[in-house]
Length: 315
Image (cartoon, rainbow, N blue to C red; front, side, top):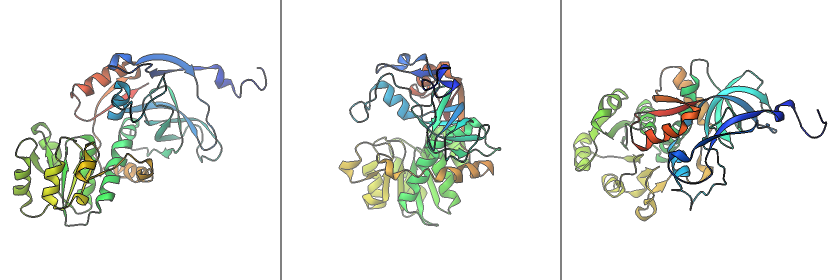
């Protein structure tokens, strides 16, 4: 080995990643070989066991966010990863063999990934669930914190059958909040099982919510982005009582959009959520897993709205 040219044996090795080199349909996702990444101080390299597919992955790939979040080609999507530590940088507190989860530095659709802020994965939580929980769990937790809910208040969750909505419902119910959730009929049973009063979404939803609330709706969380902000403000009486994670018209309504500013994020919530899952107090449904090489199919299934829960890639 030529000293000074390679920092370790690993730099001779290649790993498979899924990337895209142009914006477009799911078919732009292709497999390629890249050098195994090297962890720096505070980072761990993990052998990826599960990588969640999130809506932002699809929006980045399609170019929908090109004006707001342009990417450098070739781009490896994926930020939510669970795996086994393969090499730990200085100061991480982890060692090879530790099972961890966290946000990937440089993309998670691959055999290996770097994590800047890894968290220990409880043994009772599967790799698939740990990866699936990261973005949806942190988003739901953060949104509820921003709404400043108190026990006994009533919260309306738009899109309660979706991944973020389902977590938000469970967390709010556990805090002693009365929850009303809008959902499609195919999600009624699951949303009701999570403790919410279910209301069918679609035309006339606001009146159905008023009937279900039998009083005041104190706060609204919009996870659907289906043009519900104006009526949500009318229900609460104050735009400050409404938070959205999905409606880009938020500014014209005076509503807060949470998640645009990275400083808003609360990664410290992730160990708390993992412990809830381990105890059986929080469900994060994984709809289907795909081999990493079928990432394009996974994207296509989500774009067609076939999924009823999280989609996870398995290298």
